[in-house]
Amino acid sequence: MTREQAYLFRHTLLRDAAYDLQLPAERGMLHELAAEVLEIVHADELDVAASEIAEHLRISGRHPGREREYTVRGARHAHDNYNHDVAARLLKRQGEIGTPNEVVEAHQFLYGVLRGHFSDKRGARSQALALWRVGRRLGAPAVVSQALTLLAGLERGARARRLLRRSFVLAKRAQAWLPAALAVGNLGAGYAAEDEHWRARRLFMYSIRLHRRANNPVGVGFFLSSLGGSLRQLGDLAGAERTAAEGIAVLEELGAKRYLPTAYGHMATVLEKVGRFDEAEQILGKAEQLAVEIQLQHELWKLRVQRAKIALERGKPAEALALWRIVADMLVESGEADELEAARQNLQRAGARLRLLPPQAWA
Image (cartoon, rainbow, N blue to C red; front, side):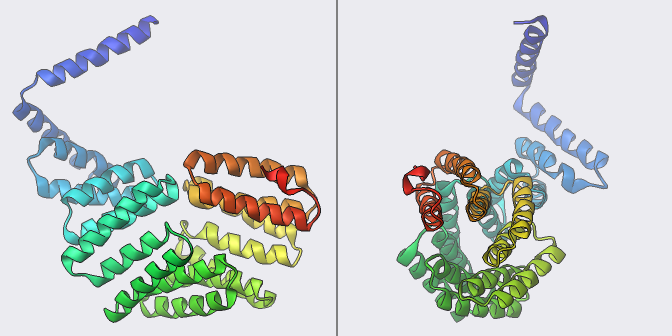
């Protein structure tokens, strides 16, 4: 141990000991004072300091109303700026002390953080179930519908479809058009994953209409790009490119970073289909860069599978295998066994069709 390390170790011990020797009332007063100082210093940018202020107020225990206010502000700021560790911590606290609407928001946002950024399916499921319980307790069918849609996102096949149909019926009965639009759109995505693109096309179009009715342009843009992917599978390549481009334009104008990697991926499949591989690789590179920037792990591996398929189409099996190893490591690390097998089969089929790699190459 160096002198510097020894000093730091002793300094930490001394700091903790001094802190513990203070009377609880005195500690609470000091944390309250620290919160007040931060409010003064960051008066012009309170959202930036909100998480730190909320923590001091939590420890102080003297002003629960102010703690709740800064917890919500800090959680929203961290979530909007993709600071996922801070967002997860504050959203959990928001779920404990927030108003009913803030509790609903906390479970929704925390589900997205855990599923999309940490690949934590178990944690995401607990948030969806908590949201379902809140909706039932409040007698809010729209909230219950949203919870069922989130739960469906963790399932496959018939079970996912049952949850989404139930979600849609609840939302439509309550005339809650946004949850209804999400349920229908996700149902379409499920059919698209099973290559039932006629059904997917119809459901995507219905979802877009409902999103417009709910005045939710992000949903319009996202499901336009999804519709482009299904039109591509149905052979309408001109319509697919036009629709996917329209969806991307909407999302880019809104700055909807969370949804753009998926939209770029749909456009890349269209460009790949017509042999415009350079353009497809370029837009996939843009999508991957954005997914890395906002730590969108759940989308990142899908983009790399797409890149591997394009490498196969271009006669570059070694590049495809290198990308596959990266994908496999990601999915093994996150425990995504179903996704790992689906990605493997996808690339096996492509390699066999192009007579480039035998199935065992993807083991």
